[in-house]
Picture 1 (tube, rainbow, N blue to C red):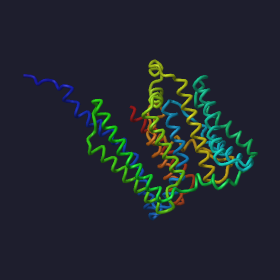
Picture 2: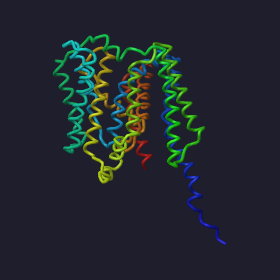
Picture 3: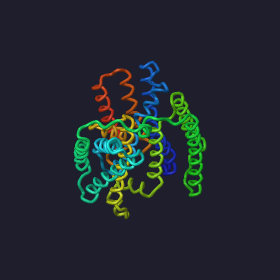
Picture 4: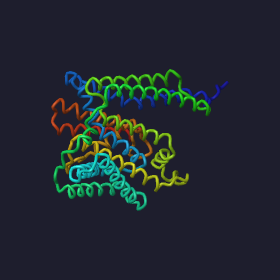
Amino acid sequence: MNSPLPTNSNLEPRQSKKLSFKLDFQAYTLIIALILIALIFGFFTNGEFLSSRNLSNLFTQMSVVAVLAIGMTLVIVSGHIDLSIGSLVGLTGGIAAILQVWFGMSTGVVVLAAIVVGAIAGLWQGWWVAYRHVPAFIVTLGGMLIFRGILIGISKGQTVAPLNDSFKHIGNNYIPYTWGYIIAAVSVVLLFVITARTRAKRQSMGLSVPSTLVDYGKMTVYSFFTLFITYMLNRYLGIPIAMLIAVSFAGLFLFVSLKTSFGRYVYAIGGNVEAAALSGINIKRNVLYVFILMGALVGLAGVLLTSRLNAATVSAGNMLELDVIAACVIGGTSLMGGKGKIVGAIIGALIMASIDNGMSMMNIETFWQYIVKGLILIFAVWLDISNKK
């Protein structure tokens, strides 16, 4: 007598285990890579790479790329690209410096002006992309030249410096030790509260819920690293304000991308624009919003960069867009659109900054740094294409 054919129920456990392993592997590959990079550079620099002082400098340096990677993730997920961010960072930072140094405006006013100028530039580019259907590659390539030209024109090719102490503190100051530990403790509590609420909501809706050990085990690991990093930074001068700004905006946009209709629309547009249109999503308006948000974040990044350097130059932000795109792609954002995570982009920014910092500490010549970063970018895109296949 023939044995019965296997039913779907017999196959589901094996398939779900395979899928679970694949997802876990993809999720933790970045963290494993980051740990390996830290260990390798720590070994070749006799532990100096992992010192509190260098970690503080590393997190400060990566803050600009991290802020830009947040916006770039949304742009790429929506199926577009922005090549103008490096020039726009220079322009917004230059405007902030000119308003303060040449016209004596206060720090609050010039910071707001930089963000508004960035948002207006994003609005202008988004209008061409969304409502005039000009490819984002062409629009932002033109923007790269236009914004750099405007910067050279308004600054007359000069370096604008020095800035007020209150402005310099944005990119160079630190959170006091006590407040650093308080912020870390609050973050840990929020991790567990959000996890508990998410589990309760999924249970109330009849959805599958991971085991308690897995969920709270991950939160425990995240909490350990949060407290450990805080401790290491407090051993030097404390948590850099620039890092705190980057992490705060990452948390805000993580919420926007995962918990709001706008975030879901962006992923839907990048995944399948025709299906999104048939579902009633306003494609043009949402693409425009993405570019406006990108521009505003570029303005903030321009402030951070100018503050850290205590000067605005005509070359500020040059080729910065390549580091940002590389950070997003390394973090798992697909250049085909529809796929990407802000957390992955932040880790990608940290990986790029770690490579730059580590190779500089090892006195590796600059041309090797460009070669290594280029190879990493190519490998990351190849990996993304292979996964899709």
